[in-house]
Length: 229
Image 1 (spheres, rainbow, N blue to C red):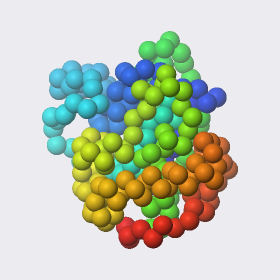
Image 2 (tube, rainbow, N blue to C red):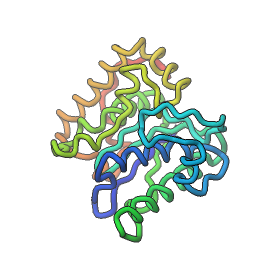
Image 3 (cartoon, helix red, strand yellow):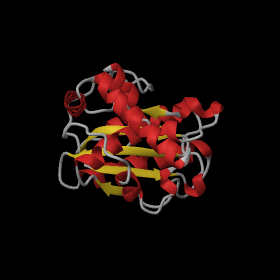
Image 4 (cartoon, rainbow, N blue to C red):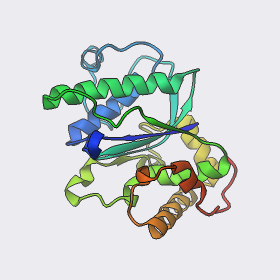
């Protein structure tokens, strides 16, 4: 499993309205397949997909490149926790996702060039303790930042799926396994809230993307005695 994250070039917003979020979510779903998709728009038309992140997509069975375990999309950056399903799956998935979304964003906004700050950042999840801290940090990442009130609708995160048992982006199998290990929704929510509280108290509402070594920062958080993953 890996922690994947990146932000907009010059810290610019990469999501400017709800349609951007919807398109990113749709891209995550449709590019997560071994097969090739040349155009999301054409693919959507051929499958009569409604542009909504919460719509139940009835698509052909697909072999995924990755399993999604956690995520948070903030106005100017995103976090993902991914588990590879095939060799090289994360690289292939991210290449398709970022390439496709950047093309969409540039066409929509009449711009050119890179949207994100270099290649995506990738951190191997090295052990159980690191994962336990990271899952709370990622799924509730929006609570660690001072997001302007007028941009709150540009936040989309995995905590809603876990806490409401409404799988959308999260892998159903992996999500159920995590909730079982943590002892259910309520205990999992409490754990994630505690992680956010610790980070907020120790560092203030500051993006950990600004730290030179995100791995060291998260590992330095105190262990909470969670169950094994």
